[in-house]
Length: 352
Image (cartoon, rainbow, N blue to C red):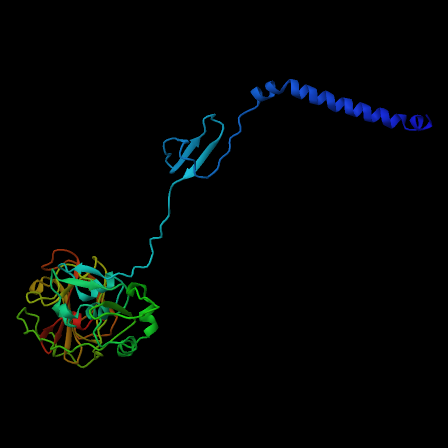
């Protein structure tokens, strides 16, 4: 009894607490249906892929698809878009058909390779000469700079690497060669890529075309006093480095370089201006000719503006005028000629 009297308050407190908890649980149990009916549905957004038996609604404009279960309480959003890299490396040689207006330089530039690589990959067609390019030819286009080579019976990887000034590891590791590293061999006739390889060009005879009678054939050797002399190394006379219109051929002894009206035109090498005439001279319109003092002369035609005068010394890269559409022309461009000792030269042989 003394213990009961001493702890009576604590015992009564625990009894009251248990009674209160029991009452709350009883009320919750007896009213559970009312709570479920009044509670809002739970909506969850996830990106997991739905099971195949779930209903899928029409795609929304942002390429997501809401998927709901049968009770309408769970909503999923699934993104169907798959990103595939557009810059995956290409290791294949592909074929290109030469079209009118193409040149060795323009084809190489379009495919991010050097002109030498294009010539080396097509020796049987072009024989190392850019002048052999013809409309309709099928050319091999390598994916990288180097040598596209046909394996011969007595070849070895080390000898080929030495011959073309590269490393044998580069040949073996190039994915496009599909080398079995457990047995790194090639069969005679296999076509392989030698990345970074190079060789000397097979020399060909450079034809010199006869000088024309267009009325501007005497653009060098004028009566102007001595002045700037060219280096013999030409630069591009316009910012664009591709053709528009005519290429160099037997009936058109120049190349027409793409240049919008008002685009800057530059001296391709240093020299003395021997002609700076406006009007419709010989169909050239506004025309400039430069004698480079070393047997070479260049001509720039159909200009919209002339910025130099006769007998003025000019230097490689100096702006000499603006491109246009004057004279016998059917659209803005630069008509560009190179002559050597009075004879027409193919500018592709001299432009970088």
